Length: 227
Image (cartoon, rainbow, N blue to C red; front, side, top):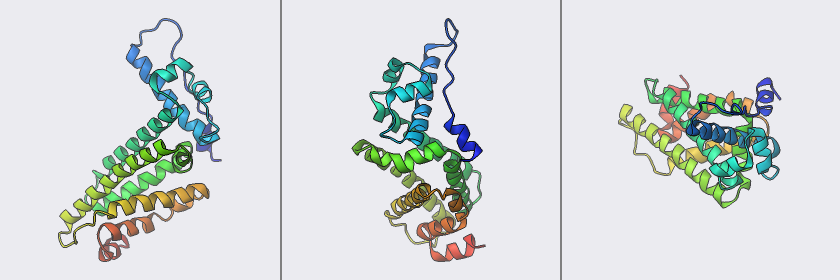
C-alpha cells in the first residue's frame, strides 16, 4: 500500500465542536452528511460491502446513529448516495478540464488522464465502485445504470464536438457511447481487481486511440492520436 493509500485508509471524521457553538443547523447537517458519505466509502473500500455495518460507518464518521438515519434510510441508500456524488464530482472535473482544451482530441485525452488519476488517488472509492457495487443488488444495478447514462451523455457531447470540427465524419451510432462507457468501465474494473491500475495509466494513448476510433474513425486515430 502506498503512502496515499495509507492516508486514505486511516481517515476518520473530525467531529464538530462540543457544547454551544455558532454553527447553523444546516452547516451541522451538511458536515454530518459529508462525513458519513466519506466514512461509508472508506469502510466499504476496506472491509467490503457485506463486512460494513452502520455502526462501523458512524464510528468512522464520528456521528450518532440517529444522525445517520436522519440522512439515509439504510446502509444501501448511504452507499449509493456516496457513489453518486463521487461520479458527479468526477464528471464535473472532467468537463472543467476538457473545456480548457482547443479541440476534441485534447479534451478526450485530458479527460481520460483525469479519470484514471482520480481512481488511482482514491483507492477506497475505486474498490467500492468497481468491486463492491456489484454486491448491492437491484438498487446497485439501477445506480450503475444512472451513472452509465451520465458518462454516455458526456461521450455523446464529445462526439458532437468532433463532428463540428470534422464535418466529414459519418453520423454516430447511438450504441457507441454505451460501448465506450461499458468497455472503459470493464477495463478499469479488471485492472482494479488485478491490482494493475498503475499499469493501465501507462496505456493512456492506447485507450484514447480506441475511443477515437469509436467516436470518429480509424483515420482520425492514426493521424491525430499517434501524432
